[in-house]
Image 1 (cartoon, rainbow, N blue to C red):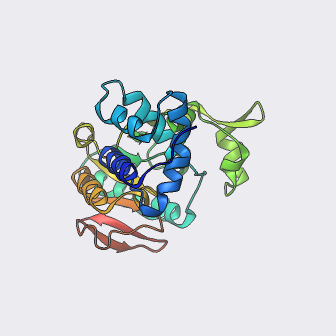
Image 2 (cartoon, rainbow, N blue to C red):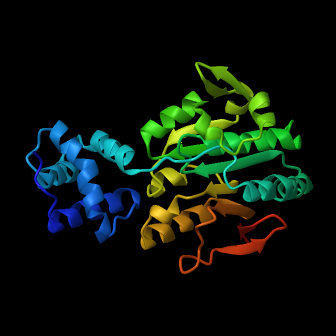
Length: 277
């Protein structure tokens, strides 16, 4: 039987997780952390949460355990064509603007980043919308998609989804871009070929520095889990990785108020988004 999580060790664990990946647990989350991590302590046959903390903090082989923690603590609830008005703004307003601007410069590249892509519904949706636009058939198009959860990425790479992932998906898209497989639906290769999945901690500035600049960054329903400083640091990283005039699309429950003025709010016909000046 694992002993209860003390206030002292809760703060140590909470701060360690925050420093590692930016996810913040306030004082009301103590029971949640205790409940979700007690199984790991039992599996590792440790005495208590303090021993577990010291293992995470000082053991050189704790990287794999950190991955397990992230899988346990993160919520990967998502679905295809989520936040339809924003996606409409992306396909009907943002993509045509990007194409016009790049055509004037003689460029034919499109780079999009799905940051915190979870199980992959978002980047696959983006790929479908780009294909449907019929504007980039002869372009070099790449969608970079990453997440900190290895479990979520395994699902994303497989591209096979349960019916719950299609709660708002038009049958037209299901028939055209998915195939039945053992009672589930699999994304066709034409869509999957656009997306490059990789493991990434959004707090890892060194790894982010290796990415090129992006025309659009999707980071939806991610920063709501981050602490204030982590949010500021992440938006700073996004700003450095966005082309001039490029866009940052957050979830509708998220904003940059009191976080950053690096991106300007832009009112489009279909939605309100952020743009790099």
